[in-house]
Length: 125
Picture 1 (cartoon, rainbow, N blue to C red):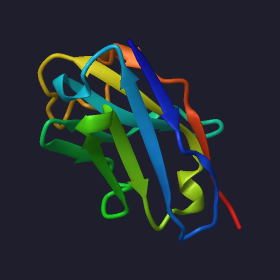
Picture 2: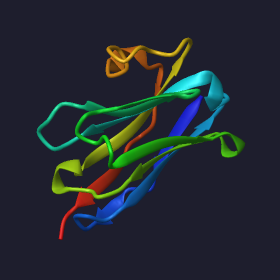
Picture 3: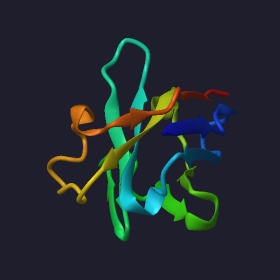
Picture 4: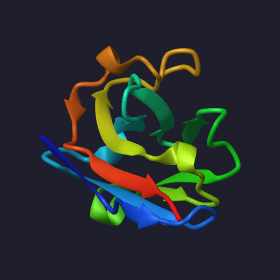
């Protein structure tokens, strides 16, 4: 089982970026997939989560980020719009087997079984 995160880069404030998490070794529609991020000097935090039709977002990204699943390519994407400097971080995707998580639990990193290697997003003018 492997997760490959990609799509990071340098983007100006107000711009957009699309991250992808490609899953191999399992079918992503039977797993929960979540995006986390870790900014310099800060702890890793949950950004967004998807399991079937259930989606959760951190308050800091609601209305700006959209998570989606591409079953044909076994990929989960994170569309980041209206980015701000505070979105600068290494973004990781994690996968979890089993039932969907509830809204109070999806941010718990120890509930995820697999992790991708991370992709760096830098928001700067």
